[in-house]
Image (cartoon, rainbow, N blue to C red; front, side, top):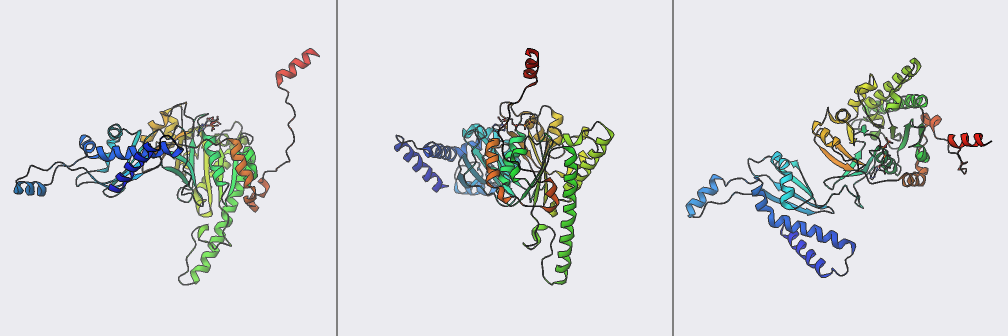
Length: 454
Ligand SMILES: Nc1ncnc2c1ncn2[C@@H]1O[C@H](COP(=O)(O)OP(=O)(O)OP(=O)(O)O)[C@@H](O)[C@H]1O
C-alpha cells in the first residue's frame, strides 16, 4: 500500500512537472495516480461513513482500559492490495469478523460518491476477501480494449465490462450461448466481433443466416459452411449432427484402447484425443433464430420441427464433440413453439442487448438472474452495443468495441487460409465467385417512370 502511494505521489509530481509536454499517457497516469491518492487518503473515513467498520473487540477494549487509554476506534477492513489499472483501480480488502460481502455490494453507490469515482463494483474473490473495482470514467462510452488480453484457444475477448475488466467468451467453459436484443441494439456487431476474433484461431465456423446471408455472407471466406435459408439450414444441422455422431464413435474407439493401457488418460471429449486424431472444433453461429422457428404451411412446420430438434440435440450433446452453438435473436421465448424453452435451457451464456419490454429480458435472464432483467430494459437507446451479461453468479453491463463490417471482412479475408475443410460440411462451403462490378439497380419507381415516359 505504501509503495503504491509513493509511486502515485511521484507520478502526480512528474505529471505536473512535465505538463508542458502532455503526452497521451499524461492524462491517464495523472488521473489514475490522483484516484489512488484520493482513495488512500479517504479510505478510513469513507469506510466509517458507509458503515463498513466494526467496533473494537472486547480484547482491545480491555487492553485500552488496562493501559488507561481512551477506547479504540472502530476498524475499517484491512487493505490487502491496491492496484492501479488503465481505467481506475482495484482494491482488495480483508473483511473483519462479522462483516459480509453483501454489505460491500450494497454500499457500492455510497462508495462511488465518497471516493469520487464513476462506478464501484464489489465481488467476493474468496472467503473473507472482497475486491472493489473502481472506474474513474464511463468506460462503455468509448470502448477501448486493452492491448494485451488473456485470450487463448476458444477464448476470445469480446467486450469490455463496466468495471473495466475484459469480457471473454470462453467456449470451453460456456459452450453454448444466447444473445438477444431489439432491432438496432447491436447484436450483429457483437456477432461480427466474435467472428473476427475466432477467425484468427484454428476453429471451423459454420453460419446460418436466413437474411439471405446479409450479415454472415460477406465473411464467407472464413466460413466452412453457410446456410442462407431454412431448407439448407435444416440440412446443415443434420450434417453437424452426423459429424457429432462420428466424433463420438472416434472418442469411444480411443477409450477402448486406453482402457487396456494401465494409467493412460481416458478421452472424454475431443481435447483428450491425441493431436493427430483431434477433430477441429466448430462454432455454429445462428443469426435471427426466429426465422428458423416460424412457419405458415404444414411443410414448413415439419421443417421447423426438424431444425429445432437438431438444434436441441447439438446443444445437449455437442460440447464433447467440439461443436458450440451461438444463437442470436430478437426474442427467444415459448411463442416460437415447442422445443424452444428446452433449447434455451441448454444455452448457458446469456447476453441481452437493449430490449423493448420486460418479457424479452425475462427470456434471457428470468430463469437465471432476475436482477439483470431491469438492467437490460434500462439500456439507453443512444448506446447501441451496450448489453447485460449474466450467469447464475451475477451480472454486468458490457459493450463490444465497434467493429465495422469492412474490418471484420478484412480479418476474415486475411485468415481465409485457416478455414478448415470439414468433409461433412463440404456441400455447404460458400461458393466464392470472383468480384464483378455491380450493375446499376433499377428501383421499382425508376422502372415505372421509365415506362410512363416511353
Ligand atoms: N458496440 C457498438 N458500439 C457503437 N455502436 C454500435 C455498437 N453496436 C452497434 N452499434 C451501432 O448500432 C447500429 C445497429 O447495430 P446492429 O446492426 O448490430 O444491430 P442489430 O441488433 O443487429 O439490428 P438488426 O436486428 O436490425 O439487424 C450499428 O450500425 C452501429 O451504428
